[in-house]
Length: 177
Image (cartoon, rainbow, N blue to C red; front, side, top):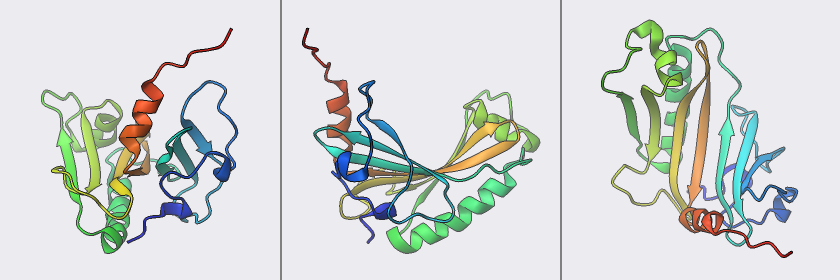
């Protein structure tokens, strides 16, 4: 099992990832480069707590243009899903159209995603819980809209320390005056 997606691991510190201090107090960072980049992705993002370290790493593909039916993005997700299945085991496909959705025609597939009326993602492990691998609690591969006819694929790895990281962010910071 690969417990170091993109060459990064759970709890890795902000400084070891060469990320500057976020002056706004946020845990969210754009990561300029990763030790083991994947050729399918061009942008990387991290959630890093000052105490807990790296708790989530995400990656985004370049945009898929002129794909209002979502055919290209779904085909690419199938290929990526197969590759990830070989590493992490079976996934659960989550393809849901909201009740009373307005954008229901096949030509409106991506618009439904953009409007939050449709979700299309592959998840490891199943929705019932469990672990994916050493240090990894969940993996989500998701289609996202970048416009009515442009899409991207987002891949996120949540580490076991994710809930502690979120709790750390929720604690109000007391400033010294």
